[in-house]
Image 1 (tube, rainbow, N blue to C red):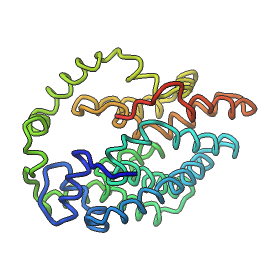
Image 2 (cartoon, rainbow, N blue to C red; image 1 turned 135 degrees about the vertical axis):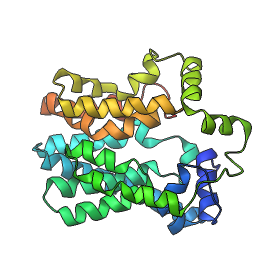
Image 3 (tube, rainbow, N blue to C red; image 1 turned 90 degrees about the vertical axis):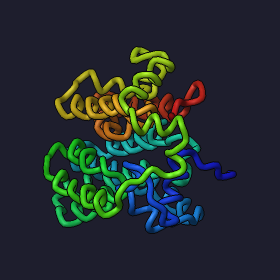
Image 4 (spheres, one colour; image 1 turned 180 degrees about the vertical axis):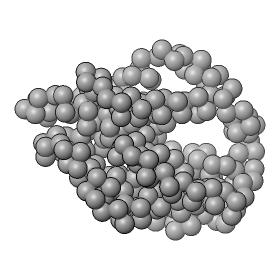
Length: 276
C-alpha cells in the first residue's frame, strides 16, 4: 500500500523530525519520539496495536464479569468498528489506534487489580494521545486513571505548540483558530446532526446497547459525541471513547448463540464504511 499521509500524519512526521507542531499534536509526543520519520516503524506500531487492542478488550470485558463468548464478541466488535479502523490517510502514521490499544491494556489491568501495570500503560497511553486517561476512566468507571492527566500538561509546557507548515495552510489554520465554528460548519455541510449514516449507522448492531442503558454507557456516548463540538471529523472522533463500553453492552443483551450472526453486519459492511 502506497503511503499518502493526511494532514494529521504529516504533523506527526514533522514532530518525529524534531520540528515544533501545533496543539494538540505537540502533546502527542511518544510515537513521534520513538518512530521518528521511519514509516516502517510506524507500520510496526500500527500492526501490533490490533492484537493488543483485541486481547485487552477481551480481558477487560472478562474483568467486567462478561462470559468468554461475550468478551470475545466485544473484542471483535471493537476491532471491526469503522471509527477504530480510522481513515487510510492515518495508516500507519496515526495515534488513535495505538492510544486505544494502550488504554484498553490499562483498563484490563485496572479491572483485574494490577494497578501498577494499569498506571504504567495509562502513562504510555497519555503520551500517545492526551485524551486516553478519560477513555480509561470511562471504561473502568473510576476516576483513578485521571491522575495521569498532568503528564499531558507537562508535555504541553515542555513541547511548546507552534503553528507548523501543515497547520498554516488556510483551511487547517481556520480549523485550528476556530474549532467550534469549523465543527458546526462541517456538520452542516455533512447533513447536520441528524445524518443517520454518519451519526448512528456506524455503530451497526451496537445500537442494541441502548436496550439496557447504564450510566457508564450514557457517559461514554456523551463524551464521544461531545467531542464533535470541536472536531470536523465524525466517526473517528466519537467511536474510540465509547467503543468498548458500547461493544460490551450490546454483546451482553444479544443471546450468546446469536452473537456470531449479530457481528456479521459489523465486520462486513453493506456499503463502504464511513471512517472520517
